[in-house]
Image (cartoon, rainbow, N blue to C red):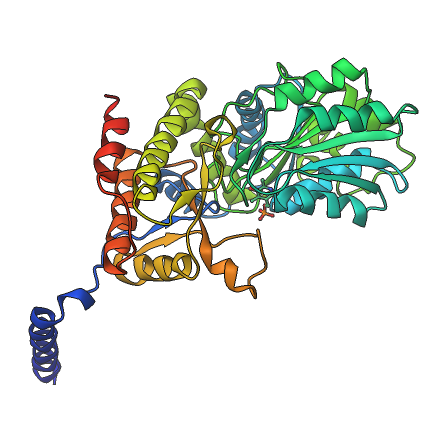
Length: 424
Ligand SMILES: *Cc1c(COP(=O)(O)O)cnc(C)c1O
């Protein structure tokens, strides 16, 4: 019986081989390690996975408790703050709501300078909590215009705006905003609003300095630059934000950051059972980040992003592919949004996934998925556990897809990317 099955497989293999000779363009090259190059969840390091693969620990005593105490200062070193952090068992949307729940009451006004869907989405979260949300929409391919933000703040003579809610890197557009400049605008106007920043796609990837930039509340989650599976949300807050929270008439018990940041007993860190396995993963991820060093982590992401931009510029010189953000200074170092004639983006994503085991990111905006134009956008995630050979593989895979689908493109893209990676 075994032999019969074996013989049958040999026949199949031979048939495949014979077919391959004549139809080499349909030969799939998917066996091997797949590469999920989407902007979150990011690639989880094997060391993080291994740290999580263990029996449940005691949550009342011992190793887990000590380890969690040690995680707090190391998280703050990633956010570059000496202030407080609260940890939640949630994704980024949960962290958004957690942050808002501590400082925004029904009827409060907030200002949302949006540069993509995530800014709009965080604003909607505030609307859901009863806030009056003023959105300034800066479109989908350029950073916010600080003059217009300044005008909006200046018009608010009564200082009704309680918070400015900014997204550092909007993952839908790959726009990166200048948060230090935004602080400068608030200071120049003399406006007391809290500066709240979504750093979900940037923390551990792009330079972010919570204290030096005067950020009052910073929000992130585990599954992007922090290299841990989705499931942990983090809210960093300074003394000014803590004061605003203390002045609230009501804060929902579960989202309250106060006991989480300064727990009397261990369960208060998490408002209940600890996210045991995620904590082991996070411990290892933080060890990796700090062993490399924050400046080096940022420099690595920057260099890899520049290699991607170099390849995309070269492709674009002979075809329809283009980077979504024209201004280099306004681009994320962790996610890149690209535009091409529809439906080529969807075809390219499909080809590299089915033939190479490489998954690229779908568009989030600028149009809905029922609009044919949606198929003219895609995104690359290059956040967290990524190195030079992975990025060269990503770019090589895209080049193969451009060739296979006969999509016109400029030559020399991989050579240009390699020169950037090589630093020459
Ligand atoms: C990923 C992301 C979110 C949402 O996070 P979820 O974990 O999907 O809820 C919010 N903001 C930004 C900037 C992101 O990149």
